[in-house]
Image: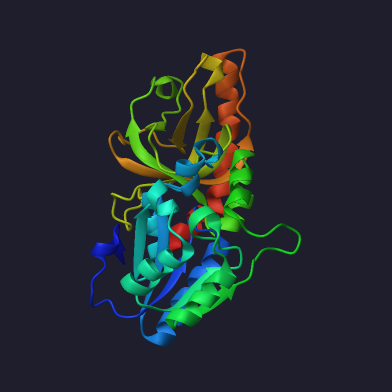
Length: 326
């Protein structure tokens, strides 16, 4: 997948494209419905499927106090867009100057002049241009003017819930409901980062953990203990240590009067791994319990043993399935 950060980087010989537009934070199932339609239409047209998105999030520029915590980092979002089958992504820097563009100017410069759009695929709630003054009706009128089709994908979701949205995913993660969030995302939620040295308390009590750096990628879910997986992208996929079952702790370690919120993963039944300075990804499967303060280290160790037993039981079927795919 080609990636461009300015209009000037788009090659002149790209040809006519089928384009979609959005923030795509989390690249959840609602986004995938739009992206899938974009890709399928591009294959029909014999052109490239291209997404136009922004960095930073528009609200981070226009109303920082209202800007959402992002589900995925920019790097994660681009990788997920690539996995959706797109041929290219235009990642535009969102600035106040860009925010002042009229819908007509945005369509002319981005869709028409730069991407030569033959079709534009968008969700029903798409807004664009200065003060979000452009909507799907605006886009349809501009499409008639410039000669591109507009395909509107209606909201999607389960009958018993609201439409699939990034806000819904954020709410679930804030509540620790990583299993429900995975249903909306069509994958487990992940946080990735470099393993750094912590206080080494885990090793001292028999549960050595991989502590992720504070600048890790991905929205950290609610404090608590989770069952999940530790993925090692730098290790060959065929290596049995590339994907490891883990009990994951999120929080400040209140038993030790901690103040810094951390994500740390104990690889089940392993004390022989040296993961320092390695980039790893923690995949959340299910929350086991909230973060608790224990009266003694012995009480903490006893509860951790229970957590590990539960994580082991929950992950056993997934471990077999992952092994069979290697």
